[in-house]
Length: 140
Ligand code: T46
Image (cartoon, rainbow, N blue to C red; front, side, top):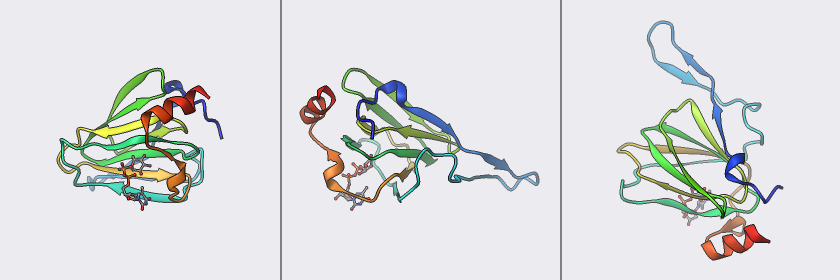
């Protein structure tokens, strides 16, 4: 797995949207070819107070795609050299975060829901939760 990802490796993925011709709203579908990894786990964040943040860590091998199913939130991304913030607010756009990127999710709107499609089952030893350790990891 690539460990020296930079902000340039982060991608927005367009999720096909099927708008109902009779005005019944939209349907978006994630099929296996949209993502560059097989989905092994799905989890979602919701009821996040607007003054709280989630994340605050990096992953060693895990790759994931974040989709704002409802509402909006900001994702602050950091590759150890640079940072950028991306606002997610479209359920037909997913943010693909490669390995070795520090992320924080903040500014959740009321009703904001973050769906996460991930490349592996939950493994605590895949997390880097100390920022100094992350910088050492990126420098290694
Ligand atoms: C990420 C951001 C966006 C589990 O038992 N199974 C799971 O699949 C997950 C994701 C978490 N947990 C447990 C571990 C902790 O005791 O749930 C608790 C909260 O997890 P954490 O503090 O890691 O939650 P977030 O929202 O800070 O981070 C999560 C993901 O862990 C992480 O991969 O990128 O959402």
